[in-house]
Image 1 (cartoon, rainbow, N blue to C red):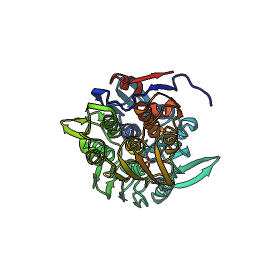
Image 2: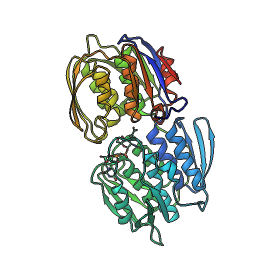
Image 3: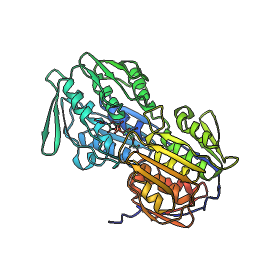
Image 4: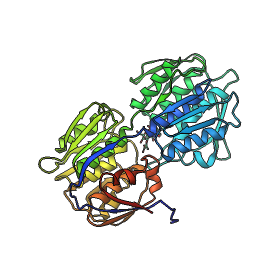
Length: 429
Ligand code: EPU
């Protein structure tokens, strides 16, 4: 394995002592930011973005857009994107697009505005098969021709542009809902998207497009209707939502290691599934005006059953971090992962650290606790499992070395510095 500078964390474990008594601030949402960057292509005079997190996936999305010919001015958490009348190319940079799943979000607006787009199969975290059939089928339904060309997909719109269509998604898909919401704004006529994902980021995008002149109804419901309108004009910057998955990850950290942890700049209403579950486990939760306060359970943690589900159900992105907490709960907890078939891969590593986990199949496992964890070298396989390994290292006895931290940097900004500020012992090499 090649060792990349800064790609390793060394964690001195707390052996389960509740050492945290402090406050942590939540940044802008990764998944909201990446779709907002793609949305810039719908705006005549470009788009300003605010509350952008400083993470790798955002950098890569901006780089993809710049490579297409957009001009980007970045100032801290803000960016201004200016999009030219003609792009310099209509094919997504293969090396970058293959690294992030979110690159697929650009296909809808590039195709709808400029008439054609060529892209490789989008990469990203290795958490399952991650097909793109909903995208290719949806573009065909809007009148486009889809061809396979030298390992890429080439999609060409009819000469008069994409036409509105009724598109039913077989599963609720976050990026497919977002991509077709964006494409439909520039299509001719009415598009009906059925069985849409309900994640708050989608509603945030839809509301912003509506305030900028798009005609969209049904936001926040499974059927969203868009009447094609042409290019939009933004009246104010796109305000990226607070990251509910980051807030949830910190809430789990608090449940594991805090006497008291105050999580600020977040929206507790986006975390009902997790916060209710933590209360069921016995964790103290209070929330008010953008802040969640986590306090240690009065007695030990109890076992729970969880099943991941599309929003507002329990998020698949918090499943691995929660599993670490469940290793410290008394009794047998069950996890059923329903969205991705590769998202229990972390379990073997937790077992090697001392966790008592029985894996039944790629979707089901049972964790029996409490079991002390012991530090050891581990390699992060994806973003959320990587965060889970940090949590495991922090609660363990002894030293844990986490390799492949670049996966964690994709979604959590300067995680080592922010956790160090809570008094935890992590160093990056
Ligand atoms: N699916 C298909 N065909 C498609 C598209 C999706 O069968 O063409 C299936 C998937 O295989 C999966 C289900 O639909 O079984 C739902 O996947 P979805 O499309 O919603 O996932 P995604 O849009 O690729 C987004 C987030 C993920 C998050 C999932 C689920 C972004 C950029 N990514 O992925 O975020 O896990 O929704 O909530 O929004 C993460 O942040 O760690 C992350 C992986």
